Length: 143
Length: 133
Image (tube, rainbow over all chains, first blue to last red; front, top):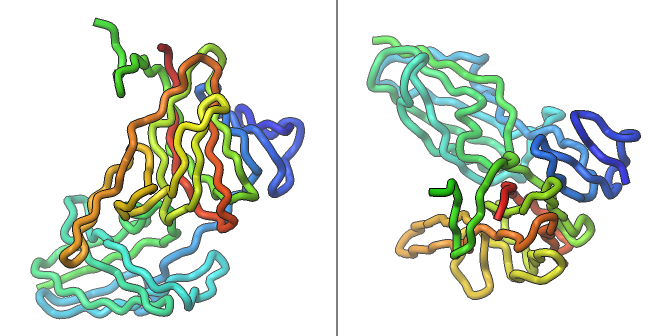
């Protein structure tokens, strides 16, 4: 049986589904059917190019799509998750519910304070079990 | 006083642990067998799944410990997870996931296995620790 120890497969990388042992740093192991890492799906903001600019207390409309790792829209994705929005270099500002219908989420947010805000990949994944890819998004709000 | 973790009456002196892992479990990929380092005892600290998985069995050293539906948020007879209590309030319904305590093998070197007869692959999330009795 092939084994994964100290960062390497012995004697060689297994085939998908092959029975293997994967050792952890403590020396224990899990025996399983080998499952190559699957590239994660991702959230892509399509309404803006990495940054949005808005005015205090005015609605900012954002559209995001749920896509495969190959950048194809996953049109049968209908789900929602809570996403934090943070102040750059500071605390959490708010959390919003992102609801995807047919793979698309349309959301309007009004910021009551001027400042620089951000959504990072870690924030997107804060409450998710299966990690999503995300390039990050920033929002500048002025008064 | 010894540095030990007592759960359910057993003395388990945890000395190391792995990190949370994910595995796509189905009848085709079963069983997932978790084994400790030499001269250590293994504890299944956490087991959960994003979606329900029917007929999941956890065996310790080949002996069945529990069989049931590995659940998300539904307190119904036959559902369980390991050490992942969650509460869901939906409308007028209040649901609490039935979580059993971490499962500790009885002796050094014993393995814990997780399997299902469900053909649909679903991700399970598990965390183990190793220690001494």
